[in-house]
Length: 117
Image 1: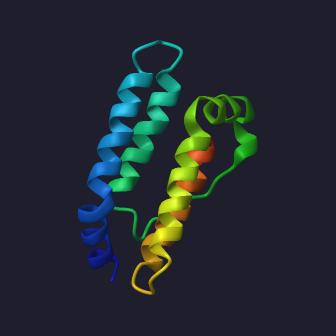
Image 2: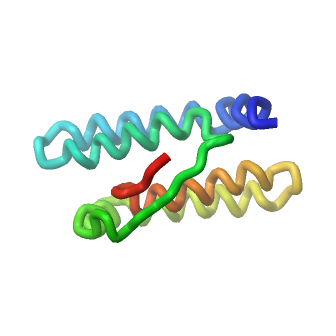
């Protein structure tokens, strides 16, 4: 089931989302100050390609200042986008596993620093 979910996810969401996260990481890495934020984008991009079977543990308190800066500069909007996608996926029974993955990415999008995959 994990392999089938990853294949369907990659076709429907993963490729576009992964490329988007990668491009966002490149934009962050233009400045020296943004490199840690870009590295988090690359970590999330790698996860978005094939998320099924992977567990994410978030620890907001590990890097609270970096997470607050992240939230102020786009993390909130990304999380809301993933939450809306999750709600749309959860409308149907078949889409519930994909909605659960979107909830996972919403957690990462709001506070990526301190998260372990």
